[in-house]
Image 1 (cartoon, rainbow, N blue to C red):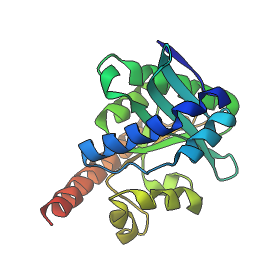
Image 2 (cartoon, rainbow, N blue to C red):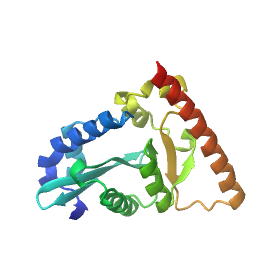
Image 3 (cartoon, rainbow, N blue to C red):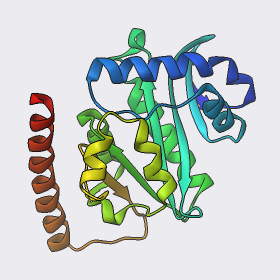
Length: 205
C-alpha cells in the first residue's frame, strides 16, 4: 500500500474519489460537502492532496485547503474505499496529509470540522484541540462550501456559530495552560450535548 502526495498523473482517480465520498455520506447519514472531479484534479495538480493506492487500485484520499490568505489550513475529504476499511489506512492518510500541510504551510493553523468520532480521535492524537467555530477561519468561502451538506440549515440557523460538526484546531505556536485546556474541554462537552440535541430534533422531523 502506497500513501503518496498526489499529482497530475492521479487525475484518473478523481471520479471514483468523488463517488466514494458521496456514497460514504449517504451511508453515514451525515454531512460531507460534495466535490466535483474537476475540483479534486485541481488539488492533485497543485500538490495539495494525498492518495493511497494498492498497485493501481484506489484505496483512499484526502486533500488540503488553505483559507484566510494561508493563515488557516484544513485537511478535508478524508475517505477510504469500503474494500480497504478497518486496516488503519485512514490514520496513515491523515498523518501523511497533516505532515504535508505542516511543511507546505508552516505558519498556518490546521483545523478540521467533522461529525466522525474516528476522525476526532485521529485529530486528538495529532494535537488538535476542540474549539468553537469562532476560533476557526472567518473566510466566508470556506463556510460557503458547506452549502452542499445536508445539515447546512443548522449552520445558517445558528449564524455559523455551531453545527453538527465539531471544530478542532492545531496551533503549533499556542501553549495553553492546564486551566485553559480544562475550560476548552467543558466548552467542547457543552457543544457536543447541544449538537446531539439538534441532531435528534432534526431526525424526528
